[in-house]
Length: 344
Ligand code: CP3
Image (cartoon, rainbow, N blue to C red; front, side, top):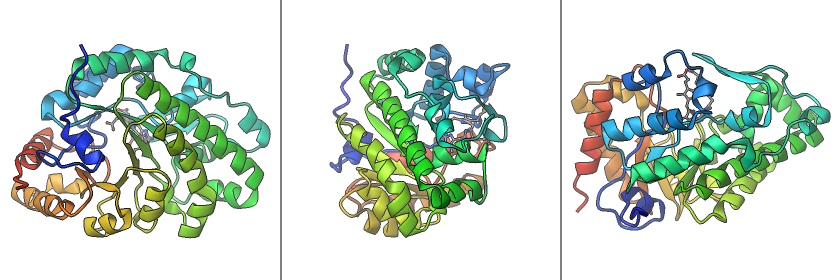
């Protein structure tokens, strides 16, 4: 039986249509803030869990069961496709992705295979399981944008300044172009697998794109994100485009080919709405407000919802991911508050 997603508040908002209530989900909702997640992950390495269809399915469903969010986010990681094609990497607890042999040369880029569906059968299977289990709750597929994924491949791990990344971007345009095209192809193929198996929206994470100036973003980053978003656009599902510290880039991130622009908490939502123009917006409660008294958290949520009314479509979210020490009960209260907030 195919579930009826036509009434989904999340999909309606993403398309700029009228909504029954402001839809809400949380970036990093499927992860370390949930005791049931820690339990199923016991003794299982992060990347192993991302390659096991049953675990992916269970972890993706956990926050939907607990909070009743308006969308599920697929449990995986932005570097999983690289792992799947054979790049030697790991996700270290508390650190993030670590690459054994960072990319330096054109030969290093050429050695990275393109992604085909045969590399990720567990993704196809997990999406199919999830679509069946989720019923009327839409599943968001995702991928990492070329700049953010390139930063891990070039730095070899997380970075503060992106010095090596930018040295390559400025100093070796041919290698940069080859690497960014390679990642764009892999990320687009990863999205195609997820949507092909039934995901009903996608989010492109360019978490670290905010490190670029407007001019460098336009010339050296955005064209490659556009390649991914353009291919995703042919799949006919709404596209969300998000990065942290991207207040200065929001207009361009929309123009890159997004239907919805993700706004972090540093940028007032009204400014994000103005930058997004006739596109929708997603965000943007400060993720640390869950540590404030509940009344204050909800009062700030009300401000976000009220501001969001003037957008072409507004999806409520935090301005970045759920912080691991977040009390799930606070997110439960927040979800119920957003969903029952009167819009009339
Ligand atoms: O809940 C969800 O959002 C779905 C799953 C998801 C994960 N990573 C699981 C994960 C998603 C959408 C991502 C995307 C991702 N991965 C991004 C973009 C989103 C963002 O937060 O800006 C980035 C930059 C990465 C790379 C990455 N992977 C980082 C920075 C980390 C955190 C390092 C740490 O431990 O603090 C990871 C690891 C990771 N990805 C975890 C999870 C649940 C923690 C792994 C664990 O439980 O050991």
